[in-house]
Length: 322
Ligand code: NAP
Ligand code: 8YV
Image (cartoon, rainbow, N blue to C red; front, side, top):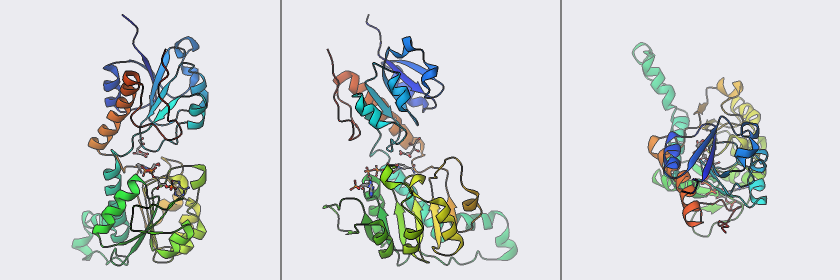
């Protein structure tokens, strides 16, 4: 009997991924993605990997027979994709299966931010409704808002579909205009921010998106402005955001993602006009199960058929056999 294909799984991953991998593979677990944790002799027998989080060049270079890295999540910024591509290693992510969940959360976060629903519930639970009467009217409303989506990809489109149902006007900024949508295109983020009062960020973490939501963009959004970020914290200058929220440069913000997770700057925690979530946009059992299945399905497909199901654009490889 020939030996089973060996798959390395560093650090935490959903149990369902491990169960699905054990159907066909030998799973090698290490505590974290650190080459020091796997001896050279064992590293030489690893053909695939599944990861939720970091997988850097040092680990890639430590695994001479590695063919594929299946990453949990649609954003694959934790994987050194350039190093993988340079070694002919395929990288896969988990697109589409989370679009609706993340878009639902973006809308929930927008409503929480504008209508202060978490604060209203706290008011009730703390007995203030009984003692003090009605919760104060919210200065902000969704009515009449114009939304600008920064990143009109798979999830951005799903957010736009939902916003249409709220009767909200939609515009967007991406590097290249889309030809398949009726929404107004703005060639720069600042121009988008000037044209709208509600900016929703859902762009990947890349060198180009680093801290692009800065003081100037927030000024352009204006005093009635609301920022929602469900993409990556990397995209926001958090110091500038805290100042803008404190000084009334913009009205409010709703954030699911942060620059240095799980750490949230005290300056943001101290503000009353920001709604904060601990990176939960895709975090339902059903959606995380679908993501887990796609991680496993990519590895099964690669070793069964030679083709990954959802390779990232930088590594459009097929399996070299023989
Ligand atoms: P996608 O389909 O690849 O869409 C990305 C969009 O961003 C595209 O419209 C792309 O358009 C645009 N974009 C990329 N670079 C840009 C730049 N430099 N300037 C302007 N626009 C840019 O990705 P997706 O599936 O929608 O996911 C988007 C991101 O959301 C993920 O990468 C991940 O980081 C984040 N996310 C977060 C959560 C969460 O739990 N909070 C969950 C899922 C995803 P162009 O290429 O034309 O510029
Ligand atoms: C997950 C995400 O929280 O898919 C993404 O890019 O940010 C989220 O869906 C994350 O990947 C799981 O660790």
